[in-house]
Amino acid sequence: MLCALMHDPDQLESIASLIGPDDFYFEDHGETFRAISDVVEVGDAPNPVRVQQQLASRRSTIIGRDPLFLVGLYDRAPTGFVDDAEQHARAVLEQAQRRRIIDRSRRAERIARDPAHTVEDAAALVGFEATTSRFKIRDFGMAELEDADLAVEWLVRHVVTRGEPMIVGGPRKALKTSTLCDLAVSLATGSDFLGRFKVEQPVRVGMISAESGQRTIRETLRRVAVAKGWGLRFVERLRVAFDLPKLNDPTHLAAVRAWIRRERLDVAILDPAYLMLGGGEADERSVFSMGAALRRLVEAVQGLDCSPVIAHHTTKPTSRTWDPLELDDLAFAGFAEFARQWFLVNRREKYTGEHRGQHRLWFTFGGSAGHSGTFGLDVDEGVIEDGRHWSVEVRDVADVRREARSGSERAAEVKRDQRRGEYCRALREHPGGETRRRLREVAGLSGTAAGPIEAELLRENLVEAVDVQRGNGRSYDGLRPTAKLLDNGHHRDDWDAVGRTGTVPVGHCSGTGPLDGVPVPVCPSGENSLGLGHDEGGEA
Image (cartoon, rainbow, N blue to C red):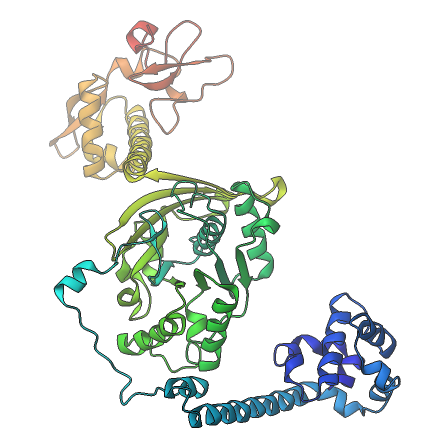
């Protein structure tokens, strides 16, 4: 296998994910593997000369004992052996695991036979619970419970507690991962989360993200760090990985535990949940099955004083509501029950290409400590051609609701004016009057939509009620435009669809003036399209 790596270094990445230098039976082979890895890492070809130089720089004794060791190794491997390097790496791993099991068993036997050690010491070596039952009940007297130190410890004041598992949920493209990047950098640097929520003190954070890709995660973390006044390389309390564990694999959970212990992590962020549930054992519809899978993760970090944070998606319909989310919106059974605290993010409006890096979101948080809140998030990420960045404004719900109402009111006003314009055009086409039913048909309006417009025009004396005679001798209720609408002004045919404003041909009229707060064309003579002077129109 070592020969194969010198011939084909492209195999190193897959092999290094299986074994390390400590997995080789002979120390010389482990040192050679480490030297080959070092040479490949700096971009050089791991030929015998270059590997020998690397061994010499490490003061290895291999070359002194056998100067031709690498040359012989390089020359004697057949082509088929080179092609099967990964298979041989797995064989090395299997033998290494067997040796470790045997070694641990022998040590456990020695300790178990030694009266100076407890049974628990030996049991710990082989993963054996030295009790008659794994289940224990620990009860509290009321005085003991009253005096117990159970105070809430905040990571982010009144937003995130220490030691409780957290779910971060939201639909696709709701910036879940970006929000987690802000949380990770904030916790690692002691900066305010989202620029508003106070981080009590810097802590060590690990983040595993397997969905967005290394380039995207680095770019997002870099923008977030710069926004908080940090260079990314100086955020030393943050560790990032891209290999997400499977919750149904005990070796993966053991690796998570080892990672948390090795890096002394206070917070471990895992993104996303659905990739951790691979293997087909967990039934997404069963709260019992999903609860068991999530519980395995909690048990893996138990006793390490580390808070797990899991990113998860919501059911599809929630992504189209544009409202704040609730825990019941999370996809799969069991997640709402599992969460002791949570972030939920959703869009306030549909995202289109016109937004150009602008995101309008809802941000909801809560937890069993009694903390909760809902805010609007306005995120500006910029665009590539101008330079991407990270700018977040946390807004109170009342402010967001007020803005939404004003926007909808403006849209409704424009729609009303468009309908009025169509109705006015229908009136001008029938200067002698016409039935209300026919005017509505010409304007393309229903009776419900046309009724308020007709009442408004009557109040403004722009129409008058008339009886319209038909050939059958019967008369029908109708309306006729008044002189105020038709006769006073030569611009009556230049109105646009709005009805109150219009585009006037060049040379006829220019400028605008308000009529009841709505701009109307104004002639140089001081008259507008309704034949009103400036004083009558309200400008004075």
